[in-house]
Length: 323
Image (tube, rainbow, N blue to C red; front, side):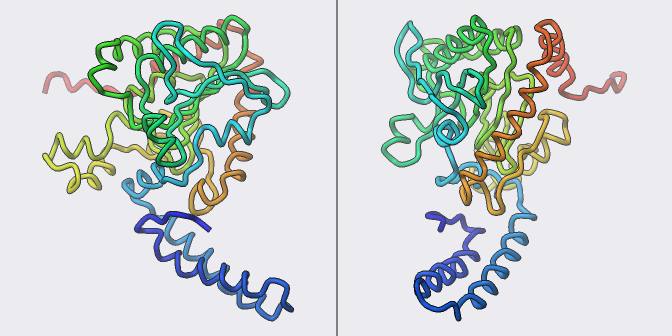
């Protein structure tokens, strides 16, 4: 059963507890409870469909940040073999907020670069809640160039509120590190697949997000600013205006698919990825394999040309003649 429930998930709590109690009580006993359990499970399924088919932008934001949501390290464990983590930017130090290294994916070598938020309080603090410092982005850059040198495809996984805004990060060149990554990824001569697995916040997300294919998990978000940050700027109150801001920002996977920003929405288990993490990993693995197979048959010039055109097409501009 899920460990933590969001406010809009709480109607599920009583039903799930009742089902768990019945299963525990009936273990090893003749199955006269089976019919009752089946009825409750059907009722639970209907309620889940009702709740999760009508989510607001703010509710999707809450799901994307869910404390039980699978982190990058979980997908690395379930989707890849022989993962070898690499550390450091060869300049300042290592940044635990960026997880990176080499692994085998369906028999082929691949480079992985991901934001890592942390699964519990201790790891969250260690990973700085998934907010990288400049050395994190420079570590990512080093791995990208390594992948290009050995002609290995890259998978990036985005899950960050944004780049760390502290004084030390600014002193060490946060903006330059992000800009350098953007410049490099546009011209990198190897396939890049990007997946937003949770929260994609601002330039901190985009710094590892320039891909040939951009995928989003169904209940993930991707935006230039958080709903709270937007509300604080526009309405001087980050709490009261966050729900309106979440709708206005068009930050959900469905919104971004309609706007042509992403290439595919990867379906999540009913109720969110945290309800079946391994099932989510299997679904994502299939999607990554499909897109990678399409990219691998392209030559370098075709790959670069299509990547360039992809990002040039984003956004719609109109000329009203100065009226």
